[in-house]
Image (cartoon, rainbow, N blue to C red; front, side, top):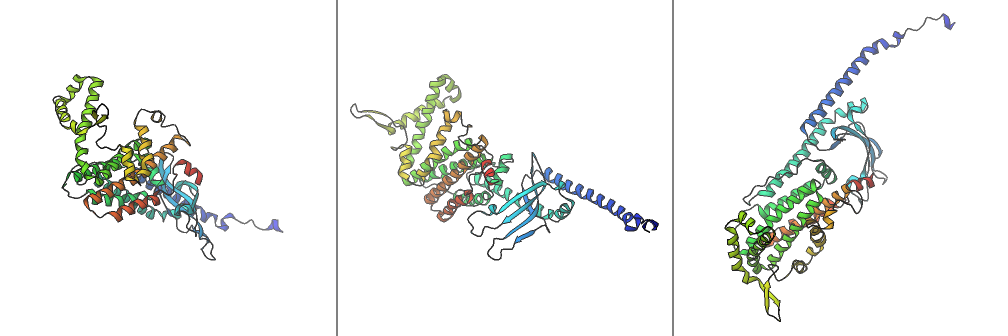
Length: 443
C-alpha cells in the first residue's frame, strides 16, 4: 500500500545542492548590479549629456526578413544612456523596426519604442545580455562626443579665424541644447560642411584693393558673427532673442549684395556712417542734455560735429521742389531698404517677412514684443522651439547668401559648395515641425 512506502526525502531531488548555487547566483546578481551602477555613476560624473542606444545581442526576434515583397520587420531590445527625469541613467527599451520599402519617410519613422525602463530594473536575463553591448555603447558615446567637440572647435575657428579676433564660442550644455540635438541629428554634419565653406571665405589672407572689397569683407565678417550668435541662441532655446539678431543679419546681407552689384556706392555707404553716428549723439543730447554727453565723450563730441559738417553737403536732397529747399537724406542710398530688396529680387524677397518684417516688431517697444510669450497656438514652450528653429533655418539661408556674395567679390569659386549648403537645409529640416507638439503627434 502507498502508506507503507517510505517517504521520499527532499534531498534526493537535489534541493540541497541547489541552495549554494542559488546563493552564488544571487551574489553574482548583486555584483552585476553594483558593476552596472558604477558604470552609470561614472557616466554621470563625466556629465556627457548625450543620449545613445545600441542593440543587445541575442534579443532580436525577426518577424519578416524582407522576402516575398513584404517589408523587413523585427523586434529587439536595446541598452542606452538617456535622460531619466532630471538625471541620466543606463536604460533599456524594446525597439520595433518596420522598413519603408517606398522610402517616402525618413529612417527615424521606421522605428517605434516602448517598455523603456532603467537597466537596473530590467530582468536579470536582459541585464546579463546587456553587459555584452555596453562596450559598444561606450564606443558610440565617445564617437558622438568627439563629433560634438569637432563642431565646437569648428565653430571657434568660424568665429575668430583670420579676422585678427578670437571669439570663444561654445554651444554650451543645457536641457534645451540636448533636446535640440535629439530633434535635429542631421544638423551636426551640415553645420560642419557650412563651417568648411565659411573658412574658405574668411579664413584666408586678404587685402582690399578698393573700397567695395573693404566693405564686402567686413560686412561679411559681421554677418559671420551674427550667424554664430543666432546658432548659439537657437540651439539653447532662445527663440525671440535669435529672431532679433536675424533682422540685423538680413539687413547686412542685403546691403552687402546691393553694394556688390553697385560698387560705386561703397564709399557713400562708409561716409554716411558719420551722419548716422552724429545723429545718434544728437538724439542723446536732446534726451539727456549736452553736459551728460560731454561727460562721456569729452572732446570727441566736437570732433563728430566737425566730421558731420564735412560730409553733410554730400547727402542733401530736395525737400520741396517749389521752394527749392533741401534736407538731409534719411539713408546712405537713394533707395530705401525695401526698394533695395525688390531690386535684388529672389531669394532675398522671399526671406523678407520672416527675417526682417516680423523680427522688427520684436526689436522695438510694440505689443508684439510685450506679449511675445503668448502663443498663437500650442504652449509657450512649443512656440519658443518653433521660433528658435525658424530663426536658425532663415539665418542659415541668409548666411549662405553672404558666402555667395563673398565668393563673387573675391572670385573664390564657391558656387557649387554654397549651393550644396543651401540645398541641404531642406534635408536637415524637412521633419519640421519639431518640439513637444510634434512628439505628441508621432507618439
